[in-house]
Image (cartoon, rainbow, N blue to C red):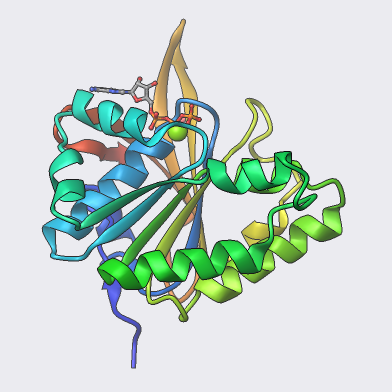
Length: 241
Ligand SMILES: Nc1ncnc2c1ncn2[C@@H]1O[C@H](COP(=O)(O)OP(=O)(O)OP(=O)(O)O)[C@@H](O)[C@H]1O
Ligand SMILES: [Mg+2]
């Protein structure tokens, strides 16, 4: 039987994905700084809340309070679902403190996962966001450790924690399209890329590309999207360059 789909809430994207992301798997959302990864993730969480699905937002790059404020600037209220116990905003700096205090020389994936499972069970969360996974792996010196950590994390999440998960990752400007792909791109069930495209003298537009989506025949083309007050990301048309 086909896996149920989880709507992202992004106008135009759910149609492209034939209903949404296949449920219970992890997805990578990558893009240069400022392309809309946090907005996409917040929108995914809010769509879940609209459908009665609780969510967990793990904010790694920013303080959770900043995520709430950024959402407010778009007209979205994350404060109320937090107060109602439907949304958990997690700050993972304690994990880094352990590392800083020398208790570990890297983040223990078993520790992170066991902690996360408790949080997920506590509110029966169905959607999970890691924004972003980069600092979780950056301080690991050896590539092998990074791969192990990511593999452990993705395998534990997929189908075990009962959550559909988005992990964001930055790409440095100009790196898009290079042959270097990170291990997580191979392990996740889908990869969505965001970028800015020059559209004229001194002007840019935003573009989204579904590079990979298991179990879904997606057309390999980029779409132009906007970030709009209240609506967040909205796909407007295919990109023609
Ligand atoms: N209220 C708004 N209306 C329209 N656009 C907005 C609004 N608020 C933010 N934006 C746009 O969204 C962009 C930021 O998106 P977001 O924070 O989701 O990017 P990001 O990919 O997470 O960035 P980073 O890599 O820095 O984490 C801003 O650069 C801004 O142009
Ligand atoms: Mg962000």
